[in-house]
Length: 598
Image (cartoon, rainbow, N blue to C red; front, side, top):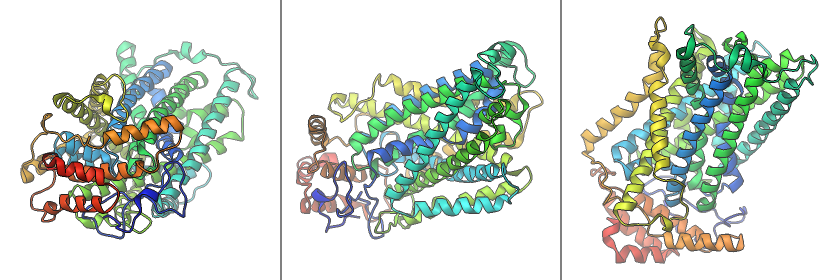
């Protein structure tokens, strides 16, 4: 909903946010409430949000079971391969997000470039991936607190849920600041573990034992999996590590969702997407290498199922080295990581729900926002899945609940990766079919479309092999099978339902609306930024608003159900709003080329 009193030109500085300035509002058509999401995230917020989403319990604890299954070489190779898939996903979606910086952009990409039915399904799949991950991280918090005390897990879960809800109901700027603080703690913890690992392996620990690359020789670079020996067992152990590696990396892509609330998305998103991917990959690859040096993969503590610091390979090595103070510090850092991840997952889930309202896939009630730009109904709708963490109080405990929730969220995240890469493949095909050059884009990713194809194929293969252990002789588990593969029908069934109800069609490359009408202004603004290192504050906000307006109105045919009575009035309302503000150039283009805005 547009605020007609908003002075767009002076609403925000592209690099500095002043509380005396009104924030840029992201238009949310047909959404009730007092306003819309606000662009208050600085570049460092965007970077740290992506960083925090990728560094959590997966790095500090999840690597333990993966290491026990795959051995030093298998763990390292698994993280390198999954990291390469992540890089391809990030490059693809970052390019799309610089063209279409809108709230909850992932489902909209699918609706525009593939089929509205796929957009609806991706919103459900990706949304549930993150909403149930809130429960997974709250369960992890209960496990981690159990390292120090026998406090009832329900108390820890309740405190975690309240903190997550409280932060997400504040302005997005405070959410960004909380992620910056948590990210700084995570980085400090990891760097401390790197130093400790080097000291331990070189013989500087209290026990004075030099380790070197001992465990690469005995028991060896590869280990047997589930009693299966030889190359077959080694290969299966390597595959098993893929699931843990994928869970660790999933979440990094949320940096792209910040586009709608970033002050300067056309610069912040591609830079942050690239930098975050490299840093995350460095952390995990370096971490996998160090773990393979300091811990024996046959150590029973790695698969103890405790789920707290006692099953962390880092803590196991620290204890064996005779260092007494560090384990509690590491556990505290892991606890902060779990809470931060849950906080981020709630934010992502709420923005996906918000996107579903703007694409008319959910009742408009879910899009209501407060004056501070917080979509409070969407936040509550995402957070309501958090109490699933109380399932950990039943048979099997928090560790089992965390394992199931991890599998559910991992598969949904991998499906989202594959779908997003396919979105880019369709975008690239549309550019080619319409004789448009990617040189006109504000930013273009390298090696396309091969990058997107690699990400699509890689994510698809990993999705299909996530539950392979249940097919091994004597390993069948109905619960594990459902947790590993239920995400696939959850993705497919909504597509079928949506197509049956609304009769939508696959988007043709020749007719896909690429929303490129404002790229000349974007390119000029980027040139000005590079020349002076100061954003063009007079034009960039207008471009962002104008492009956002295009996002919500230049929909692929069939993306908005025909029975919505308000759709027909949107284009004229936008032109009036654009004319009354400072977006006259965009409005004049709409009037000159009406066939492009239909």
